[in-house]
Image (cartoon, rainbow, N blue to C red):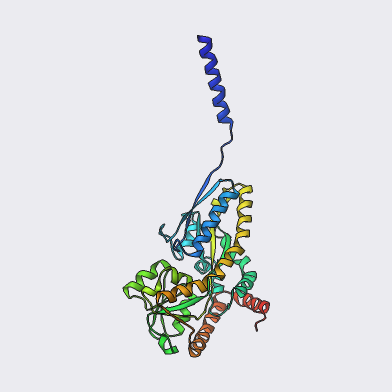
Length: 332
C-alpha cells in the first residue's frame, strides 16, 4: 500500500513538473478608443483590423473596440492618452496631434487638397516626418485612412459670403477655426462627440465635417442645409502606445504591421465610396444638399490664404513640403 501511494505521488510530481515546464503563452489585450459611432466606416475598418490582428498572431493579441467615445477619451487628449498609456490604442484625426507634432496639421489646410489622389501625394511628402514626430512622443502609427472631404452643414442658408457673418460653426482644429473666422463666422473648436448636444441645444448654428459623419449622426434632425464646399480633407491615424507595441514579440509585431499595410489600401477604397451613399441618406432624411454659389467659393478660397501663411510662420518645414507636393501633382 505504501509503495502504491509512493508511486502515485511520484507520478503526480512528474506530471506537475511537466505542466510547469511548458512555456507560458503570452497574451496581450488592448483596448481601442474611438469617438466615432459603431456604424461609422472608420469604426468598421477598426473592427476588421482587430479581427485580422488576432488572426495573424494566432490569438496572442486581442483588441477590444470601444466606439462612440464610451471611454471618455476624445479630441486632442486622444494622442496624449495613447502616449501616456491610458489606452494602448486609439483612432484619431492627424490634426489632433498638432500639439505634439505641428506638421501633422498640414493636410487640413483649407483648399490644399482636392481629391483622394492629391491627399495620397501629400502623404508621400509629409507622412514619414509625421510618423517620426509621433514616435518621438511614444506613439506608433499603424495605418492612416482619410475621411471624405469636409462640407458645411447649417441651420440657415448660405447663399452669399455675408451669410457667414455671426454663424456659430463647429470646427475640428485650429486651421478650420482661423479659416471660418476670416469669413466672419464664429468658430467653436470641439470634438465630434460634443456636436450633437450643441446642435440640439442651439449652441451651434452649423458644423463642418464629412458627409459620412453627418449621415451617421442624422444631422437632418437638426440642420436643413448641406453645402458641398469640399474645403478641407483630413485623415485618421490608428495610434498605438509604443510601450504596448514593444511588449509584443518580434514575430507578432511583424505580422501586425504586415496586416496593417495590406488593409490600408482596402480602407482607402471604403472611404472613397462613402460620400455618395452619405449624400443619398441625408437627402432621404430631408436635407437640402447642394453646391455653394460661385461667390461663396471665391470668398472661401480667399479666406484660405492667411491660414496657409500662418502655417508657414508656425511650421518652418511646411512651405517646402507644400511646394514639393504641388510640384508632384503638377499644380503651380
